[in-house]
Length: 361
Ligand SMILES: *Cc1c(COP(=O)(O)O)cnc(C)c1O
Image (tube, rainbow, N blue to C red):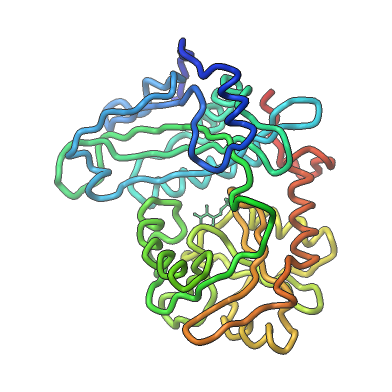
């Protein structure tokens, strides 16, 4: 059964002057647009009451399942201003499919993939004035599904809400592009075999925060996790995938094994890198390959990737009592070339030969 959206635009919009001020310096995820999209689900009626309305708080019963048992998933994708003034989404159908998979893992109802894309289109059309122009700027879309049933029994919620909100965004890490330093977590893991590591669920982030705090306390920007079993294989950052560049130009990235989140940026980079003549290996990556390789010149660059920050160069990798820096520690040439190639597609500066761009307006 297809989901039909009612469109009920808000009558009180942020005025153009205030919006222009926000768009001039949008930061990340702090200000939201005039509208949102919602759809309700119950076990009895399926998805219903889908609507675009003014952005507004939701009132929530303190006994809602999501507050106690964390039954919730989310997505993140961006709308990019195109040359000539149009707006396009980047690979939204991949986010739609991934959210359905995440819902499945969290025993939430799957939001239909075509309805997901339609919801994104509706919000971008309605709030197109909120899509910033300028280098590195975009409108970040945040779809999510959460368990609304009231009651403390531990079982899948029999009701849920899909919501979509949007936030104008500048560069994720503020200021000029600088390499991030990583803290190699000794004590904590992000995901274990059979767990929820491959799902984009709130709980994964909750579980990573104390390790992220530890990274900051140790003077690093981000935490990097190893596998839960041998504590030896690279997995990913709290919210980004990771690549190493070897001295012969080969890219290596941890293989998709059920404990990393399969990033759409990761997938796009693999495609672009191969087209640019790089070999790409998806395999297990021993953290010592990085530690030793940074010293003997085998590993020349490292970078992290995800929708929010695109491609971020990695400078130092640190652990208690040690540090490794691949290459010069400055953004590497392969890293920057791939970043440019991906952003050229997203901002419509180069032909979209993969059908990745989804034109909205
Ligand atoms: C969202 C996310 C990523 C990046 O995925 P993209 O589709 O590239 O944005 C990587 N790791 C984790 C844990 C994530 O939640």
